[in-house]
Length: 401
Ligand SMILES: [Zn+2]
Image 1: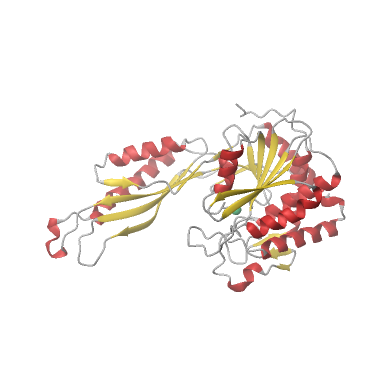
Image 2: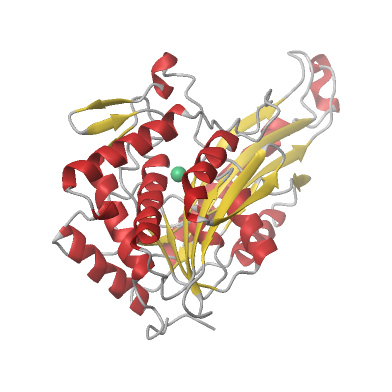
């Protein structure tokens, strides 16, 4: 059943362990918007490692600079025809490991689990996709359709790796597989994320004569209440069989300058999660209109995040085929699911079906003692390989324009 590289199960396991421990040891911590002291892109150690790994096969690799100090690596295996190809994507960057001491980048194997920062998010998936691509190359077979593997940069902060690929390359992508920790469950839908700040302006005055000012903190209270009411209405109007309703969360608040001044400004940060099928722009336009009815002097910042939802139809034939291929490997039928968190998959242009599927659990992602089961990495590789080697020409996706 486990056939990565055509080896016995033990050898495949060893190969997966060697690859994943190498990738964890190569630190690729995303500074997440904080100052970055390095001179090379965050992802460079893994980019160079992958270039060396694929060089003997003559694979076309392209470095893509997607943001200051971030880069991706695109690997291209041309198909037998120029029919739309399959994009595989996992991200190279990890969240920081400040709370781990020095164990984070010294991977260890215990009870068939590999521990280390990035073990499941997202170097487990990246290992699975690399193992699958190696199997394809070692077989000497040309895939029916082109296979791209994007080892993406900057997923954890700006999602600039996938955004750069979509904007700059205009590849004829027919379907997408995004590796993230889903316990190998095919995730076909997830929420979109919109984040920005709302600032309410007041007027400063000495607190001994507070009546001469306008207290911006007090004037922010009706905004917070209005957001709560709006969320309530939205959840009644918009539902999904795959996940909880849309949400509006005030995550931070800052106001005032000194203890003896009426505050002239108060800023709240808002995290707005929308459901698949909800238009991003319309969602914010409607909300802003609702808030403007409060007649308060408020200003909206630029969006810090404006990430689309993933809305692959459960009826799409691509989904049914991937479930069949999963059954070949796992011996059981996986049920397609939705999740509340976002991923790079939402950035694929509308009409191209995408599935998020990878080893490990989201419960371990970003956590101390993050780990992944070695067996799941090997199983993911076998699933990815089958998708790479599958002939998709006869599959008409429901959502293609
Ligand atoms: Zn991730």
